[in-house]
Image (cartoon, rainbow, N blue to C red; front, side, top):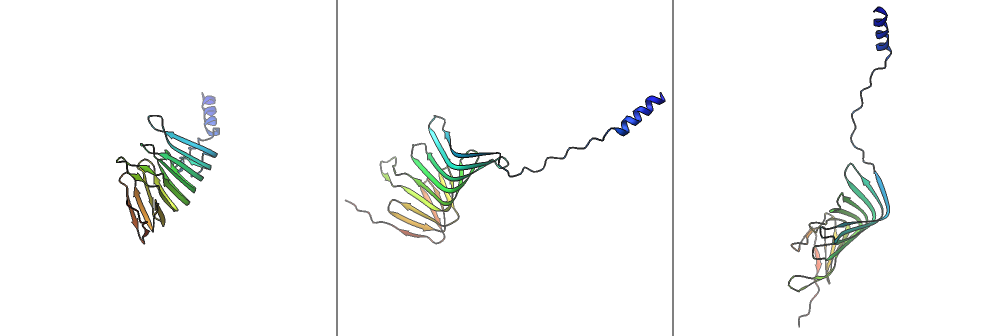
Length: 185
């Protein structure tokens, strides 16, 4: 019995202690995958193309579920099939590409169309160093200077907030505009 007790004591003393596992640290902001010369498309419930995002390089960050895109180009179709395009030197998009921050020569263009009453709606273009586009709600914002062109009319402002559904634009700061004269027959 003494020999058994002594061997058990020796076994307990010579067995290494369990090292407690370290608690996982905060997630690091490191990309988990890259894409080069790519195109990502999303489709609506009916199967129609909703959004297409193209770029020269992209990096996905799992900690924030964001996608950084270089030399981005975006095509987006609303429910009526009207096309809106966007481009910039760089973009930061959320996981489902419903919100995109465009920076560096950012430009968003909504193509000319005809409204429900049959009236022509001119092409609408926004450009600046930063534009924040909300794809689903068709909204574009910027806290930096922008230039807005609607047909032959041009405006500049220190900041803006445009809501396409209501067709309302709020220009803020120093606002300047040139309204082109129209001919009536």
